Length: 321
Image (cartoon, rainbow, N blue to C red; front, side, top):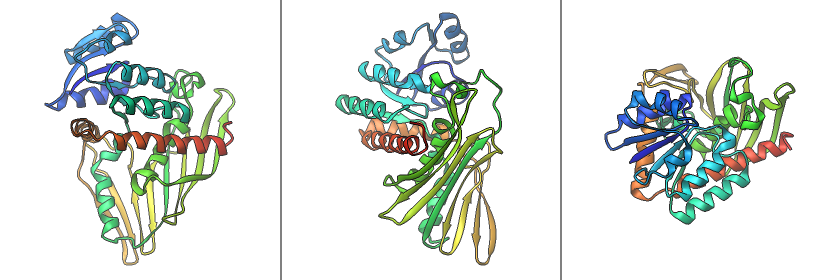
């Protein structure tokens, strides 16, 4: 897979680009920035081409897949332009700022036989496979409910794009998106938002923290999710069953050298299950390559629509519009 990167975001430079180059089957061809000088600077450590415009990168015929770590508000424009240029797309979360954008982009991808994958890399970490295995073995009995939380302390002031309304900022599209994804990723795509609350920061004009109540009526499951900026740090989900409870303590941000743990509570006591370290960026990119090679992009396209519908539900019921 020959890759190009649209934008020199920190997550691209620190995590995704090194992971692309670490896979022998991949070739990182170029990175584009808004200026040639910046493009040259960020490209040099990777030994690749730096291009002074996003259009210039999309014009490179050899590039097969494009990674887009731009601000949320720019995703739709550049995802669709990449698709029009015949490229598969890996886009940072949240992929789109509205359900309408998601539906249009997915329709375009389907018409061209191309993939869009939303970069929730945490799904590909070993710890979640262990969670699924424990659930299948009946470690906590029948699942009754899910609770997912993700929030963190202040970032560093006005310059952070998460605080900028015009760039698609706000907590829902950032930390909130993880908790919604955790629910559907673990327990299926049939949850609907039944209630939501969004609280706003008047200075920045974006949602600051919030929560939602999701229900899958067919399974008889519900999920309580909460998220926020300038919160006490939380990065977990817990699954409550008829015979126990299972908690993933570092569910979304486990680095490649970090050993996460699961807390298993049962009638006989509580155990901490220490797991092996795992590189979810590497795993995510291998997954991306496989679905392209095997022609299995439809599941990821549907996942994008499911996520967009959940976000839309929170926006409508939480008072966003």
